[in-house]
Length: 548
Image (tube, rainbow, N blue to C red; front, top):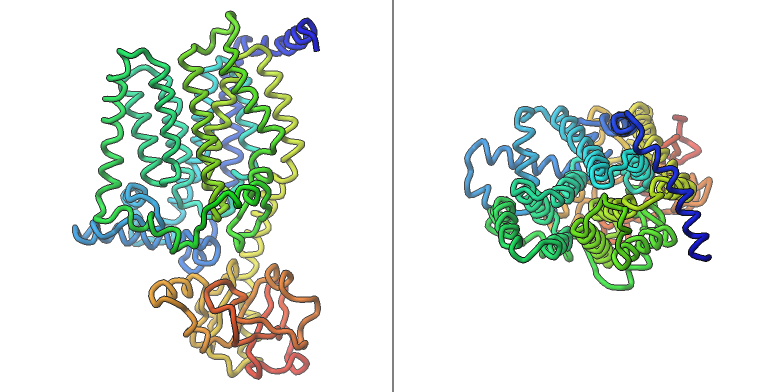
């Protein structure tokens, strides 16, 4: 392609930039961005606002159950003034103390109101996700001076499949997204207050979740973007901004204990061998911890190379003289932001925990920094529109699939509770010898339906028992029934297995029990959403059983 042809193409693309300067377009783009974010927020919120009672949270969003336990525990310590208990609180689940303190304090008015506390925190953290996207819109509009471009960027973020999250909402992920978004765009302001705020946000994010620490390389870019005489005041502002997060992190007596033990407690391994797995892994189910690979739920290699090429081109080539939206200082900060985000994503992908939420914040920073660099050039609006359409064609089906999976999970969990009476009746009528049972994830079971059973164990309770006692194998001795959801049954059993000699060990529920040896359970009755498995001779033979 000749330089003349290339120039003509850029000129044609640049005609789309004219719309950016039309009267009223700035206000219209803001309202459209708020409308898009608001509609998505409402729909997102609907799918997490049910199932707020303790037994429902334990089955619908298992990590939230443990997190709320920790939050309520910290509230009790604060209310009783238990200084020793506060110092011993540590960093549960390897999340910094500041996260737990923030959630405990902000939800104090709902102390002892479990369901309301859960709903409030879910609403709060879900709002943080959309607040982060709106901050990105505002920052991009201010830096590129192109409101339509910024609006298209928000639309792009809304169709990133990974952000359609089906896991815990009460967690640091969206909080960190908001902190990184605010901190990043604050760095472009030359006031002391903005620099202090930026340091506070990044330091708080890193002390909450240690894998965010590489994002601190952004500050190296900011230093390089300023003259030598301006660097000392910057450092002073950053130190001042980082003091409070550092003090909060160091407040527990052993702040690093849980973080350093993550490899053993969460069975985390490291190595380059995980990089290709993380890149292409595809899973939707929470049973598989919502693993989603880079190419499946974030961005594919060809589109990523476009972003990378844009950043390298801007870094090496610079801007033409008539492109004054970005100064050289801003360009340097953006380039360092992109590389810091890329490094954070890369390092995270070297672990065996391939959870997409680990890179929510750095991926947002990666997309935003590349977007601003591209947005300052001529023809950027048309290029962003083209990129958005290509991304939608590539990832649109996956985005719809994730939304549909969330809807299906919501409806399936709701249906399981409504049909529990039928299951309870069938167990009472057909399994008179049953003592205890264990129920799968995403199947709700109020204690009112236990009937003659001594105990219906949730997997959360089994995991808690294992943590306290080292293992849970002793529990399996008294468990006579397993209630497994249909998705799990379809994955492990051949069709029409009722009455066959097929059996599964108790370890079918996960790594709670020893994978070797018995006891074994056979399928004895199918319901629409679950199958009852039982030990031998605990239930009546299938041909003798009554119907549902």
